[in-house]
Image (cartoon, rainbow, N blue to C red; front, side, top):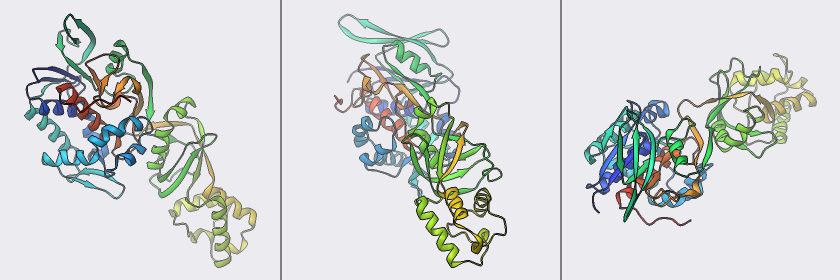
Length: 420
């Protein structure tokens, strides 16, 4: 295969995985990984509340790709060759066992992200990867050579320069990513990065004092759009969070950005019941328990504090009995339960995820090798690309998958490229 000089810019999950894949598949290659900070794999350390949600238990690629608001179609082929099943096997072969939780998320059995960090650092060291921390890249030039493939000249943050034959950019997809600036300078189109996976700010009296209250299955939708989601929902100090909200924010990342995060949210606390089904259930409650107090008869299983707050919002007196509830009041309560409206006035980034959508335009990349279609020898992995997943381990999975393919391609051991 010959000696190849490979440089990887960005010491996160995708960059490390690419470096390891390249080094393990071509021991003769000279591989250097530059990380601008003193702390590589920082996002891995803090993800999942410090436990690291490595991947998801879903092992069928066609099901996996349904969890990517952007990039799902492009990821199908790569996930078929290196998906969640292969990720689990990769870590197991290096002594790290993963466990699957009820919601499909997979964590190390240690419940400690340091286990994953140590595994990646150890694998990189054993494979011969040269890790350089506190050293970033200022700019990259693509250098044509007569009678030979072009290569790259990198100017580092200390002013020195270095050459390579193959280059991987894996610096993430936020607006300050130097990788996006470099990709654009080398001819790529950049889809503007905007936040994904964020929580909603709601200044609503119905939520005040309910921080920590959660509902197992709520349905949410953005008024005036086709955006909707369902799942667990959590009330926070600033508004609403939980998987239902995070999934909605991911699928609606660009659309909600365009509203400046100010919109009306429809919220059904008792999903999958419809408004009419909820009203019918309340009417049956009135008939069956006429002499009981409404506040103490909560057949929907909602948290008591939330039930009381929704009763108050519907105009019910604290001591009201079912026998005294008229049809208008019944309709008002059904609306609070199944068709509430909450005004969203802003967002907060989910501290465990801080994912963005946006990045290098997908059609400019060969997803078989993760190589640029614009600049030969240039590769991408992870959030540099305009792809992102919902919460649940899907973003790390795309990092492992794209990193693995990019690393093997740069090392000269890639599978066939994808023409589509």
